[in-house]
Length: 524
Image 1 (cartoon, rainbow, N blue to C red):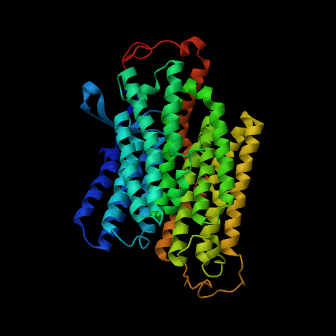
Image 2 (cartoon, rainbow, N blue to C red):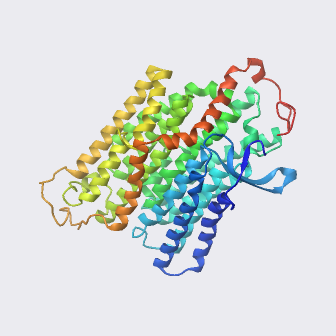
Image 3 (tube, helix red, strand yellow):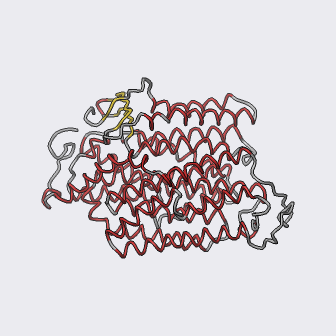
């Protein structure tokens, strides 16, 4: 293991703390009473977790692709079941995204959630522990435990605090993701039978035969394509988003969808590089369909939340396109797009929750002409909407630009189709902004919206919540280099693994592999 890991030098087990703190915090909620106490506790735990995660960025070494801040504890050595955690340039950014988003989930639910506060805070904290656990796990069994653990809290968020069709949405979400988990579990079992280890970095270096890679790639791809989600496996997402409470939608958009992209980068490309090369045309095609179909479906929505949900299908299509272009710019763009989508779409769902608390409707028709009534609200809405379709100077522009440039380098046709997705994004977001800010306005402010709803502008809590995300919109948009510097060595190593598979003789990829042995005949 020492070949792949850099020991933690911070003097305390930072990754274990990031997992255990929200886990313990969630259990403590059962001993607390009072709505304000519970909300305050949730905010304290998530904020403390966010603060403790910052050394992952400040102390991160930018010149290596090894896994840093590593911690190892052997549980059952004879089965290779060990507690092994660490982060590289890919996972560290997703851990930071998770820890920084979760306090905002508590804040945006401050008045939105009106019942079962104890259970709600507990579910949020358990969800955070599971999500961070997924990104830091370097043992396949540990990874799978956290992967499965997050399904139940997310199911409860939708089923207990969701909208009118919450039963349908929660069951659909659970069944889809459970199906993907079955294929993931089978892949893990087969990998252990083949190599006798669950240690993820070692499995990345095993040269599996081509036939095995194909089946491994297909099983992994189905699991991660459902999570991301890719067309045509996307139908669970709009239902889940529409029925979920605000915090649930933010978690789905900002973090859960990124686990699909993370899975492609962590498992498919390094463990099945030859199969990846073989299936690249198909994955690029599905990514382009996701981009265009997501844009067209979003353009036809009258429900603001459903519009943003379908837009996520298109935006995540850019992520998978960037990944399977298999270029440096494409991979960097995909990673940036994952981070940027989490920031911008999370903010848009918070904005939808804010207006829903005032008008009790998510229909565009019921939320028109807010410009004179809620100037601070529409200011945030305009900026985050511009960022959503990649307006220059905002964070999403950098990621989409890198993906589009790489697409045109690979194929002009691929680039032109991807451009269509960007145009559709501008169309549906500008349509939304035009209606909610100016449509049917007489140019004067009124006490209500003309439909019996008394409107008020953002309060301090809402301004701070959205303002925090706004900082990252312009920071990443104007200076993406710090993030690229973090991810660059890991992405370069990943691309090198794929390129080595391209250069291997054809016969090598089809060579035999004895069960329980690696290609070189040695145990990892």
